[in-house]
Length: 323
Image (cartoon, rainbow, N blue to C red; front, side, top):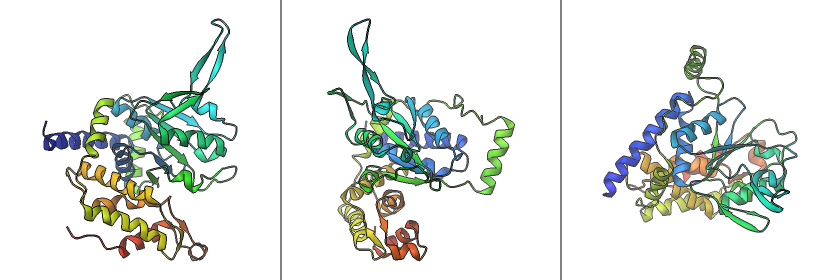
């Protein structure tokens, strides 16, 4: 099959998945698209938003459309690493130790309120995210691809939480901000809920499976082959390097952010039906790639500036290559 035909089929599949989820998760088209970009780029996502904005519904809908197993861990202060990864238990009847696999053995994992668990439990999950492997009692278990973690945290209720260190935040491809839907979208959401077209029990059985594990792996493989011109790569690297010298930031992004920009830019090119990356692809993914990898200076925080304002200024300052 020629690359053009493969691309057309992949773009069509991605578009149908996106449209299907948008019918269920009303009023969050940007969030749905960014999650799909992360999936096709092979990365993990940190979702930040208030309760009740559909984070669980999003993951369940994604699992249903992709025919992938879905798991969920509710992170709490007493959660242990073995509660995430699994552990060995002694079987009295067989007189031997047996491995009990934890909830991380899945394809789509919702790590709900990840910052409520202590650092050692967070680290257990983040190690799995990086290595796609779990060690239990000295035995290694490889996770079957695709494997994607969607971790959530509440931006306002910080009592009793353990914020993720910057080195651990860097393992997430995207940090996606969930906001309340606009008034027309919220009216439509309430209308559909009252009419029964959307279930308040997060039932996604009405969604049709649109792709399977093999199809997702094919799309991920295709994304890695899309053309990335040296000028576009240079633009991505300059954006990241400029963040380290930006006056309002005490910490900029590292090399992993440059790689993330290129991976995510390729995924966006696929969703747009192109076999090459343009500067606008890099610009479109810059905010979710960079917002959790920068740290504001004390003066910037006192002035009331936020990461979104500074990232906008950074994008204006760094000149993009002309197409």
